[in-house]
Image 1: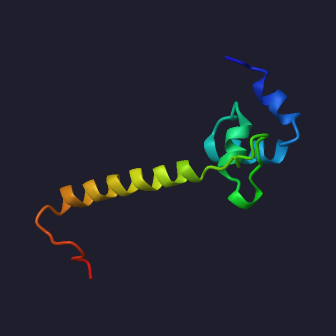
Image 2: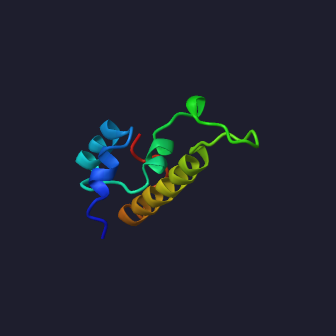
Length: 88
């Protein structure tokens, strides 16, 4: 375990983000670049030398799909004999 990690991270240029993530997550993130990418909107995402834009949109789409599948299964198990849209 790297006991100096919190101190190295705090002396980086992302001190405010690191402290905020520490308060939310309960640990110091090792790779702050991943979190910066995750919280960046596509309009401000950096562009690589190949002209590709680094964005988390694909992961966001995948996350939405996984979340939708989990909620669908939960509803199906909880209300097995109800029709679609029965809350209306």
